[in-house]
Image 1 (cartoon, protein in one colour):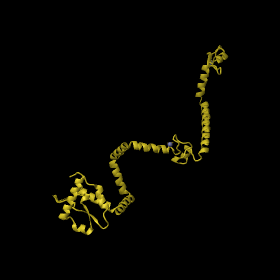
Image 2: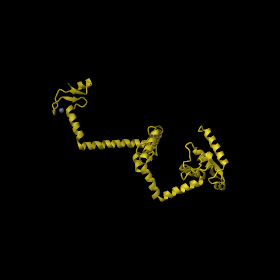
Image 3: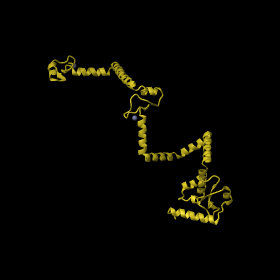
Image 4: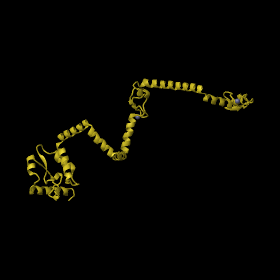
Length: 281
Ligand SMILES: [Zn+2]
Ligand SMILES: [Zn+2]
């Protein structure tokens, strides 16, 4: 077949009348008239050739660089504050304004390439949707590392004078500013130590009694706490807000652990009433 007949027929390859001088085959490309197997062999050899390959790579790199620079120049014209990632890294930034926005249109990026706004939104959503899971993970981690964490806190407290002094100072200031609460905590600890806080105690109400203590007065247990003394059980009041009253400091210390019959009756009636109101008695 003649090449022009193949063109007329719209073929891409055709069988020529004369064989190839090199390989004796007669399959040709219609577009160029080149022998099909010889052309394929030449191309394979060209691809493998290291010199030609290097040349080809430089040409390609040059082309890519040029098109990227053109793209950047166009973006920079619209967004003069924008940086390329390489520039941001070069400046030692961790967050920068990029040349082009993220898919959602944000112009704030980490140098690892992630969008700051999208990341924050994702983390917030993840935290909201997996609250239980995260808490479980955190609790598991803390309990798995409990001993190490305790040790770390202790050594830090021991070796770091500044930290210890800071913590003591903070505690002292807080106590001074929150006298009522501090006394409430102290008395709660004392009551717990002698097991005088019942499980149904209203800790907030207890604390309120101390916080609202009028100036110049002290909080007193109507029926003293006492607990056990020498294995012998004596009368013990409960650490509940209904067993608390305000006394002047003088009256409180003179009262000591004694209480009058009226005190006891009033306190008892008060506590029973309190329990009834809550369906506990
Ligand atoms: Zn050939
Ligand atoms: Zn984004």
